[in-house]
Structures are given as C-alpha cells and as structure tokens.
Length: 365
Image (cartoon, rainbow, N blue to C red):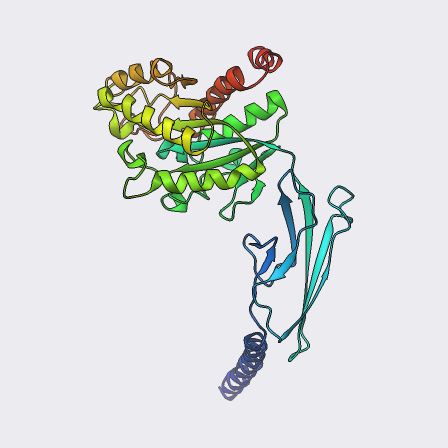
C-alpha cells in the first residue's frame, strides 16, 4: 500500500513539474509575441490573401499586363521595426528570378521574420461571371471525385486576386450562405470542358446565393446582390475580358413565368451597361423537370427556351435527363448532374465565343 501511495505521489510531482515548465514556456512565448508588433504585408498596396505571421512562403499571381516589379510594404511601419526588401530580378524569368523577400526585425526583442514571395504573371484570362441561386452556388455532394485543382482555371478571391480554382467555387461569393452548404455546382464541369477543348486560361467569378428570387437581383434592391456582384466583376476585369455571363435561377419564380422574362431582360441590360459589355453572351439554365410530378417547371422552362427572342445574344441550356440531389421533392441537382449541366453551359459558350475549329472539337468529343 505504501508503494502505491509513493508512486502516486511521485507521478503527481512529475505531472505538476511538466505543467509548470510548459506553462512557463507558454507564458514566455506569449510575452514575446505580445511585444512583437502585429502587421500585415501588402503587395502593390493590396493585402496578401490569408496572411498570417507564421506562414513564410506565398505564391502570388499578377495580372497579365503587369510590367513593374511589385512593391512590398507593411501596414505597421512603426519605428519598432527594421525592414529590408529584396526585390525579384524580373517577372518573366526562372522561379528564383521571380522571387522576392522581406526581412522584418523587431528592435526591442531581436526577433526576425523572413517572408518569401514567388510571383507569376498570368496570361490574359477569359472571364466568366456565374450567378443565380442554389444550383449555381452548388449543392451537389462534394466527394473526392470533385476535389481536384482545375487546370488553367482561376478563381477570383475576396481581395480581387486570382488563385488556382478548386471546389467549392462559390466559397468567395460576397452574398453566399454558410460555407458548409457550398458544394459542387455547374462551374466545375463548365470550366473543365472549356479548357479541355480550347486550352484557354479562364477566370471564374462565382457569386451566387441560394433561395434568391429574380426580384432580389434587381438593381437597387435593398439586399444589394446586384451591386455586390457588380463590384466583384469589375474588380476582376484587370485579369482579362468578360466572355459570358452564366445564369441559373428560377425555382422560386416558377409559378409566375409570365412576368419573369421582362425582369430577366432588365437584369441583363443593367449588367451589360454597367460592365461596359453591351453584347456579352448571356446563358440561362432550365430548372429541374421533376418538380411537382413533372409539372412544376414546364411553363418556366418553355419560357426560358424563348430567351433569344427577348434578349439579344442569349441562349439557354437544357436540364433534361438530370437527377435530384435527394429525391423528387428536391429542386437541387446531384453532383453528377451538375457536371453534365456545366458541360452544357460550356457547349453554348463554345458555339458563341470560340472559333469554328473549337466548336468542331466539342462536337467530336
């Protein structure tokens, strides 16, 4: 019994010692960092996406027309910091030549941080604006099949940068719902097919929100979906030129197809005017055919099929043969159907925006 008590006492002393040591180290570490100035690093005046002081290497994409070496600065430039910038040699050379560094030292604590920036000037991108409600945002279940990084496809970030695109493509929408419900949408299949046929470098501006009506997208509406989307699209234009607008919305408006087209035509006209793209292609998608035992979408889809009569340089894509996410009471497409829907959007863009040789390739695939 005495041995058990002795062992218990020794173990308690050991654990108390460990806790004291680690507690001291943790406190010491916190004290050091509390004295060390907090800062953010800017490249050409823009904050680095997801910057934190622990991450030391950043790959930064630059717009196609960038010719000057980027300027690196800090948001906190107090006298407490010594700053040394080592600029890249040029923007078109090897990775080493395209690499810059900034070394930051704290005078009080003699602590230094070094950050590396590897620049890449992107080619001019073909830009596509993807807007609408939940099916455009993406509700298809995101399995490992859809987690790849897309080749030649870039996604507009919150700070108006471009990063390699991967699902969920609606994650940076400034009007979206919770990130947990953003999954596979048509942008995935659309961009994969477009790149596979044309080899183009494309940029996606995905700005959708589930549950929205056509009225909520009206310019001047109190929720400002239109204005927030317009702002993101305008910020993307430094990366390339707008080739098409892809639209998928209507589940909430399907009971009143007779008033929808006028509202949609006004939306398209406003976007074209405000983006200075008077004839940019507009592609609208049909909604699920199975709704209300096959009768809930018929009138709406028949109306969408007449879009080219009312809106110049517009077309539509079919939702025939697609399948639901959960069951036939669900208006959302499953991931496989989202892939097909996206490819149908790509076919329409290939027909209207790319040369005949690319159109022929699309037909032969």
